[in-house]
Amino acid sequence: MAADASGAAGDLVQVVALLAAGVIAVPLFKRIGLGSVLGYLVAGLCIGPFGLGLFTDAHAILHVAELGVVMFLFLIGLEMEPSRLWGMRREIFGLGLAQVGASIAALTLVGLALGFSLAVAFVAGTGFVLTSTAIVMQLLEDRGSLSTPKGQRIVAILLLEDLAIVPLLAVVAFLAPGGAVTGTADRAYAVGLALLSVAALVAAGRWLLNPMFRLLAAAKAREVMTAAALLVVLGAALAMQFGGLSMAMGAFLAGVLLSESSFRHQLEADVEPFRGILLGLFFLGVGMSLDLTVIAANWVLILTGVAAYMVVKSLVIYAVARLLRAGHAEATERAALMAQGGEFAFVLYAAAAGAGIIDGPTNAILTATVILSMAVTPLMVIAFDRLGPKATASTDGVEVPENLVGSALIVGFGRFGQIVSQPLIARGCSLSIIDTNPAAIRVAEDFGFKVYYGDGARLDILHAAGAATARAILICIDDRDAARRIAAIAKAEFPLVPVLARARDREHAIALLQAGVAYQLRETLESALAFGEQALRTLGDDPDAARAAMAEIRRRDAERLALETVGGVHAGRELIHGNASRARPAGDGRLEERRL
Image (tube, rainbow, N blue to C red; front, top):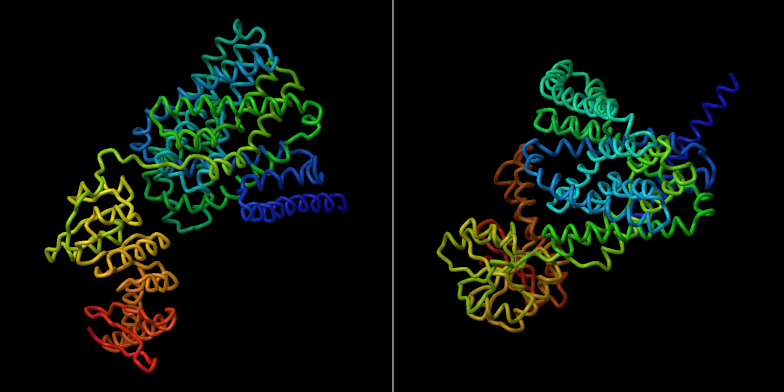
């Protein structure tokens, strides 16, 4: 009994250590700008066999934590309707195959240069080609790029690499001593089993999953729905593993099959907490697996290998991206994100070791090389963000302003500017519109708006856009610093033209008033006041009393804004439904309010 209690306490200590490591390291590393992934890796190294020694078997944790990658791919699959996935087929099988094929050839040459035999160099390079899905997905999510076109192209490549693990394992079996003679029947069986697993999963997704979730929903047992979500993810992963495919690919296919289900959002909410915890555990496990004794004994070869493999792989990724017409900034970012090896390399190296292609020490060296590359990747991405090229949108087909004339000049044609333009157009006002977003300009043209490319902070652009002859300049951009600069330039160069500006918040409103604008409005003020008035009515207030309350709030807000404006020269002016209220200092310093 005492031994059991001691064992249970030891297990609890390990659980607490895992949680504490993540809770302490991740916020700290994010605070200093190094990202959550590197925080997990360092935390794992600290509590692992080569740190505090709280864990002795990091690989056991990795086996469990791989479920985090599985669940991540399931959630990605939920966002990928079959039609959308079909639309990405060129990226998956075109861009993906091109990058994987070119990288295998180049990295095999790197292995030969490092002194490996041809078979070992091929296995080493091929394993390094398989990018870490977990790290890249997490970095894309942290950067908010997962749903962008460039992010989706990276996802397509990762999907192809997940698919590639099956033929690559078959090649490893072929390269094994005697594999060419005895492996044909086994390979045919493996391919057939993989196809059968995929077919079974697709059939279950189409005809079983939705009826099952309908029955569970009717039972109204919330915990059973959560259990069913986990059952679907883990069951699909297990089915693919039995078929010789990756668990992550099985989870992804399950997500795709459920992407059009009415239970999609419920599944996403149920799986998300488990995904986050297990994915963090995966990174902790990778950090624990970094064998410092192997690195110390072979540090020259390992560091040389990390540098050579990452540099060559980056160059290949960049070249393939540029050949397939990606921009310089996107190609460089893709190279920085995908230069490392990944978790599937461990599977490939283990299979090669089992087949006798590589020995134990070589397996340890290659594994350490991959893990070290994974740890370096967040630093590479940080360096890219600070030093790399910034993406610039193409201005093909977009015109710049030249001798424009309009009743009003609108600077910025986003959501705010589009709404502002509607009453002006309805009343027959002529508009000249400039914006710095070429993509938004092209979209506006599809709806009949003629928008010109131009930065309102440049005086020559303001002249070309007709600011000198306009009856008003309307600054509708959401960049507070740029809006203040434009207001100051416009008032200095065109003092007789009223400038109206969109403000982000109270501080920004004061800065605009100081810059000389005739009128400013915080972008959420009127919507919030209208919402508050409706809330009063919903709570039973008389409509007239609700309107009076809102009018009083507007009046007090205008007074406070005028007092906060330095010198009080430009008193706060705020909109009152159908009226404008102007508050300005009276001769005795008191605020006098007028109705326009």
